[in-house]
Length: 518
Image 1 (cartoon, rainbow, N blue to C red):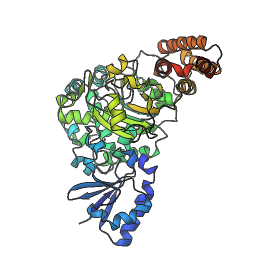
Image 2 (image 1 turned 135 degrees about the vertical axis):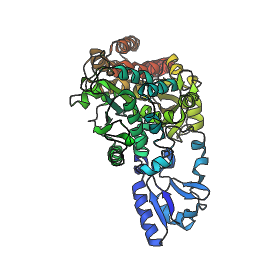
Image 3 (image 1 turned 30 degrees about the horizontal axis):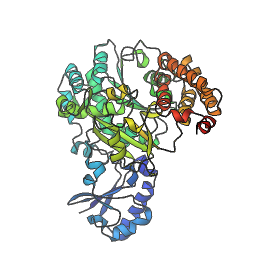
Image 4 (image 1 turned 90 degrees about the horizontal axis):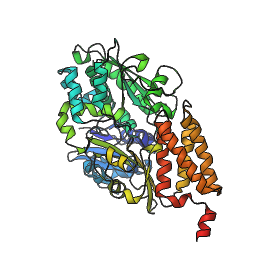
């Protein structure tokens, strides 16, 4: 009986040699005359262990990692195909502590199945949500998504059901479902993992959204920096069409839905939904004034749902298991699970899906294992380059939209980047302004000019040029940007700047002042 060997084709694993490893494994299997098959799965998200090989045994899958090409012969000699003992052996994959502690709902199949096997997808619970939705009215689908408490996972946290209801009730001969896959925040990779590791769940979620709102056409707006995801998603759409998942009759029903993959051109601001729509229509990505909302006049002026990858990928399990099942996870108004992406200076970086409510301290100290350098944690930035820096004093903050907002922070796309005590928070504040200046679409003055003046102000603080007056000016600039910017790029830039100033004021004192004080 042939043995299945799983070697991830995920970008994170490929970046550390997974493709070469797979090629050499194939050669070794042929040379040794072994009865084994290599399956290129997605990543489980344990990136410090990549490339992580898994072997299917009678006991379950056994994992080994991180595996280098030079380890292959030793692994095969040690009985890899039987799950034999070896220094790189990690035991049963499901028992690895980082994975065992998770609540995998959206990512249940990621790293488990062959991403491009619709048969594999169905065998692991895929399409059951869609089949359920096909037997419901659009209004009932919207009601179930609303009752589940699902909120936008792209950063804003807006209730998904309300957005769908607005599009359902809007008048329009043609409606659209747009998936925002322009994942550009530092320390985030959940969207990419889903698209590369379980693309059919995203397609299924988009089809359900189409049935629920009356939309018959969908687009995935995918960033150009994700070539592997682009390839996998395009192939998955082709397979979906060939098997009746997409097209004029979805799974033989009266509903029609088709979709395309569109590739962006590298502008961070196109992660903002209206700039994304401009780009999708073939124009420069510039933020639109709202109203009108995209739900009323979106793509090509038609009613449009714009949802993040994880939001849409969470829908199938809600339709399969029910609103109550999903809503039972989480806390407060933050229901369900959130895929926390752990990056930066950590021992164990990766994706950790759990119900809302875990504290920041648990994630950093326990799950991530502290810093890779062994130095004390100084700050954790949550929510991408526009997220606030939290000091250890705020590590008791639970992962919850409202809890973070109460501490002048935001969850955003749930990426966390850890810094040790060598980090210079004045430099980090400067980076936030500089990032905004470079990525601004230029439409509104607070963002376009405020960010540039912000860089100059931080440089004056560093130079000791009336630092107290410059701090006052910087604070005023942030206030103007926060409340005067047209979109979240300029509006959220003050979060990293002001949190750095608030929690690490000593880093905003020039060296001359510090030496004088000492």
